[in-house]
Length: 424
Ligand code: UD1
Image (tube, rainbow, N blue to C red; front, top):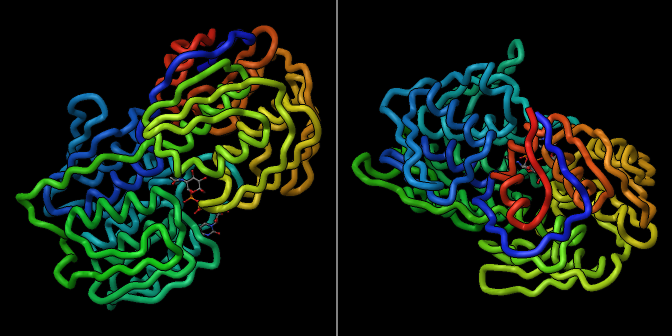
């Protein structure tokens, strides 16, 4: 699938941000821990969510989309513990069923996960955590087998505040007796959302959003928390990465754009950097107004775990820096191999040098429409930034990767005045 964009249209108006992909993906897995039904609101209808739901169904769970963005999930007493290879390889977040199944059933079997091709993404921290809680972990023929041996609370220090490892450990810890403490835990808003959901379902968790999280496991929780007759209702937080992406679209091609359904404190590192490049951002209660009044200025960016600048917005920022006056330096500190979009941007006229985890961007350059390829989800978003600001027509191949994480992106951008359409 291709996205075809005619550059040069000024964006103005309002856009509503969807629920957070990364929160929805973990909550869908975590629903297995609740004994009763789960109703999630503000769930984005994107390809990654649909893939995660296929896994729920393959494991025996029931999935029902109700009204717009509302998802009902329920799990039987007996569920399957083996994730099918063909589904798990579609997205890395399939690995989040490991912690959920460990809590609910005491065992799980899954292939080493797939997902965006953005460097080496090992699972050592997830497995170290499960091991510290008394789970046997074996790797055999590309599969991970986890089985409760003597499950009990443990104390786990993460060498790096991995989002997925923190989430898997939190979920598994709900189902083992005793106290589990995670040190150097990830502090992302999606972790706080997971903790709030689990607490709402009957778990005892404190410290989420700080680097020390404490989980009191319930000995009786090996078959889930809460009561089977109870429904856990929860609304997913707005997607801070989608919001940040639309702020960058507005910076590249906007006059004045209102971004609705946001939690502005989740966007502080992004707002600070967009101020640096010369954008005015007015913060409302649950909206932001982004205004570009003059030329853009270069800035330096270091990606870091939250509350640092998010790695997921690094590629769109790279495209934006091509339009800014001066030399910008990006230092990518979360993933390796996340600069592949630079070569695609160069096809449009960008001047970017990449060395190791550093990229140097010279601007401003005249970006010209070209045929380019989305190498991953966020690279796809970066190419849209360049195409909106570029001259002439840009054709983005592999646009289905963009659909993994951005709900109705073409529709939302059209409503803002862009010329963008899908072509098979
Ligand atoms: C999550 C997000 C992703 C985001 C990333 C970092 C989801 C579904 N995805 O991915 O959008 O870009 O956080 O904010 O929530 N690592 C290890 N060992 C491990 C686990 C991770 O070395 O056991 C390394 C990874 O290789 C990577 C870094 O830690 O270099 C960050 O990974 P992690 O925070 O785990 O990212 P994900 O949870 O996969």
